[in-house]
Image 1: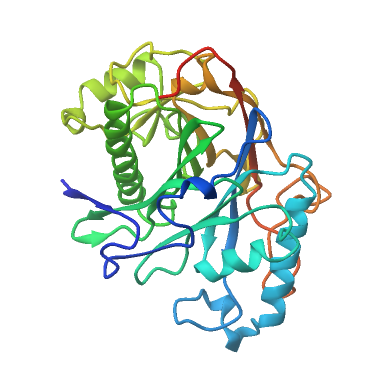
Image 2: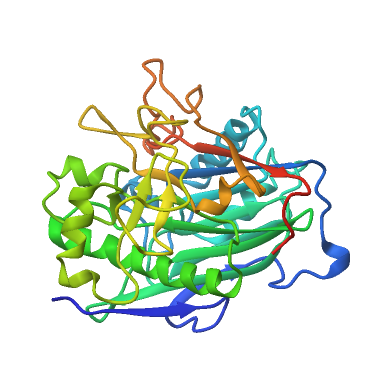
Amino acid sequence: MKKVYLVLLYGLVLTMVILSVCTCNSIIKEDDKTENSGNSLTLLSWNVQALFDGEDQGNEYDDYSVSKGWSNEKYEARIKNIAKGIMEIPETPDLIGFIEIENAEILEDIVSSALKDKGYRWTFFSRNAGGSLGIGIISKYPFSMAKSHSIISDGEINPRPMAEVRLDVGGQPLTVFVCHWKSKLGDPETTEAQRKASARLALRRIAELEQESPGIPIIVMGDLNENHDEFYRSGGSFITALLPDDERAATLAENSSETLSLVQDFFVVTGEKTQQAHYFDYPHNLFYTPWSNELQNGSYVYQENWETIDHFLLRPSLYDGLNWDIETCRTVTVPPFTTTEGNPAAYNPRTGRGMSDHLPLLLTLTIQQGEKETR
């Protein structure tokens, strides 16, 4: 059995293990706080498909090396198109989680382009040392906390960290995790184990937060490389990192030696806005998924089939009618993000055309005023 160790890496600490750059202050001064202009908050999750800058750093994918025709001109044009695409979204996002960003400088280029007057004053970037791509976050509201977490599995650092930021908007806290879990490229058992290790990392941190502040609103967002119904798609014979709240999955989990530890390695996802799981009895594992409800079809196409591998997963405190609650969630399915056929307009580094092979997801939260004290 593979041994998985958890390493929590905060901000710029342990930079020999993980590169984590935060261009805001970890603790925002009182006079830096941005006042919330309304009672809603909109978040965008988007895998932008291998966003490299125009210079060779040594870890680029082959198609993005200067020797293969990649250039500053193509990079700058891509930044411009990405910013313009975001401007086309009617609900201007307050926070954007970018997946597959090469470095922190790219975030600065994005916010200083067509978005320069949109108020994205706070950014956070995280990438493991030696990795090609990382996670970037831009926000109109300050981070009262920003951290990076990573894992060690079989003696190797997982190449994809988990970013954690906390916002306090209008006096209402919200914790957001932005993730990019292991892809399915490779041996299925090995890649599933790595996604489960990432799930365990998130659940351990969520348990810590909820023990400190019960009921704190928490969102897990990003490209998890796992469908919301992965358990059914894979035949229901083994534990996946995302499990449905049904009897068969619960029985399988109960009979597995892997679930005996205090922190499990799977999320329980449900399309019901319920405060407790029907078949599982783990206090921190239940998440609401908008897929098959607010979200339809998918965000990524593989072998001509839609997949639901990009996610907003919400803890029950985000649909209890108190403080932050889910209002709407949708996939951005309009040009320039889609082709005329309605598929994601994948970016082609040779021609410089397209946006990304993933569609963005857009989540809007609203504050239910005056019904619960801030936690």
